[in-house]
Length: 310
Image (cartoon, rainbow, N blue to C red; front, side, top):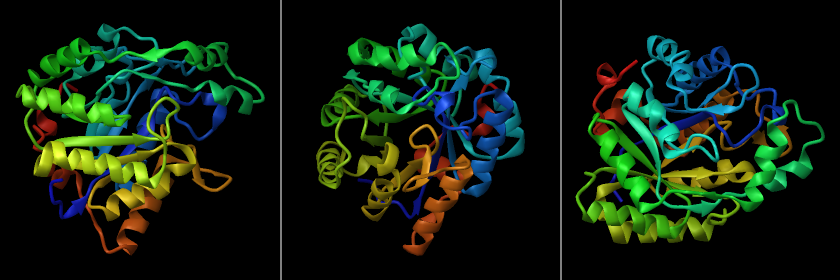
């Protein structure tokens, strides 16, 4: 693992994982997404991981026009690195998933490194009332759903976005995804440093156990040596504990309402900024320094905000 002097905080502001019903704090329309993204940056996030939603009902969309409603305001208001999803919403075609990043040419884009069963259906039993007609079937269909990320799909995404100068947050939901990433490294399709986002706690992926984090790190160390930067994401109630452990091990952290709606046991977070402020406080209490956006750019060898398409 690459030795880092400062911890990069990423914030996943809003995603396709949670429905609007589950928390009133989750930003849905473009004004809310911009406001919360800027707030997260002000609280200490160097990277903002962003999805878009339709204004009328909060459903996921990868339409570049929807991203363009909030990205210019974010860029004008803060200097955080923008990281556009290529995962998009569940069930989207690869063309749809890549559309926003190809049109808007961000410094960073997420890249899922393997297919997996992506089970959100247990959440149905926890929601008493749905706000929009799309929400229940969106969750229920994941009982018989595979999130497709084939080698051909990954190759296309890496090739087309690399040509625009975009680099990647490689999302690894299980150990095999690290080996998939190593395949593309061996083919020299990507250059270090690799930002390896290890994701724990999604039903269908690796479980949220501390032993699994140690195992993922050992495997990544064996595959990539000093050419990668570890980052950790813990879903739901596992968020703060696992990301703190990842930072102690020398990695970076990701928080945000896409990954967890909570700030503590039984307490819903009021905003993305609240989660960012909490992890920043924890890191500083551990005598770990937090990276600024420009420091994150240098660490990840990004092209710079002046080279994006928004």
